[in-house]
Figure 1 (cartoon, protein in one colour):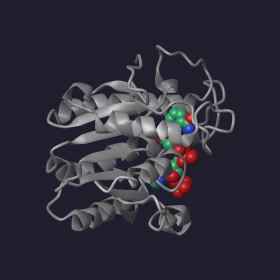
Figure 2 (figure 1 turned 45 degrees about the horizontal axis):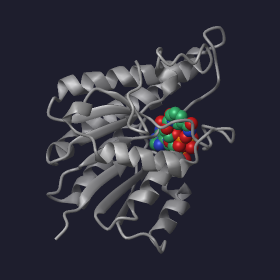
Figure 3 (figure 1 turned 60 degrees about the horizontal axis):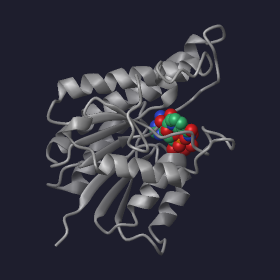
Length: 238
Ligand code: NDP
C-alpha cells in the first residue's frame, strides 16, 4: 500500500502555486491542501477536482498569509483534515510585488506591505504549522524567493522593495533552520516565470517552474536546510 504524502501550498489560486497544485494532483500518492486568500476566486482550483488527470486528493482552504486569524483558522482546518497524519511539505509560495521601485523612489508603505506579505506571512504560516510539520517524516519547508534577492546574482537597483523583502525571507529561512534543526527549511528561486507577477516576457512557462520546484522540494534532504536553491536544483549565491 502506498503512503500518502501531504502538501500545503500557499497562494494556490493562480501562477506558480496553481501549477504546483495541478501537477501534484497527477499522482494518487499526494494529498494537496491548496490555500488561497479568496475561495470565491478559486474556480480554476475547484475545477481541478474534476480534471481527468487528477488522481491525488485536493482540499481547499482559505488563508490570507497577512492575517493571523486566517492563518490560525486554516491551521485548525488542516489539522482536522489530516487527522493523525503530519504535514510533509509546506510550500510558502504566496507573494506580492507591489511596484517596481528603486532606492530613490521607494515608498515606506509599499516596502512595508511587501515585507508583511513576503516575510511576515511565511514566518507566521510556518510557525502556525510547526506542530503538523513536526509529526511528519519529511519536515520540508520551501520558501519561494527569487534570484533578485541575491547580491551574488546582482540584478541592480530595480524592484527594490521586492528584492529587500525576499532577501529578508532568505534570512528568515536561515533563522528557521537554526530554530528548528530537525526540520528542512530552505529557499527556492523559481526562475523567471510567465505569470501575472513575472509578465509575458519571462523565460519559463509556469508548468516548467512548477515541475522543477516539485522535483527540488520532494527530493530535499537535511543537507538542504538553510540553503538557497533554484528550480533546477542548483545553488544560488546569497
Ligand atoms: P502571481 O502574482 O501570479 O500569484 C501570486 C499568488 O500569491 C496568488 O495566488 C495570490 O493570491 C497569492 N497571494 C498574494 N498575497 C497573498 C496573501 N496575502 N495571502 C494569500 N495569498 C496571497 O505570482 P507568481 O505565481 O509569479 O509568484 C509565486 C511566488 O514566486 C511568489 O512568492 C513570487 O515572489 C515568486 N517569484 C515569482 C517569479 C516570477 O517570475 N513569476 C520570480 C521569482 C519569484 P490572489 O489570487 O488572491 O491575489
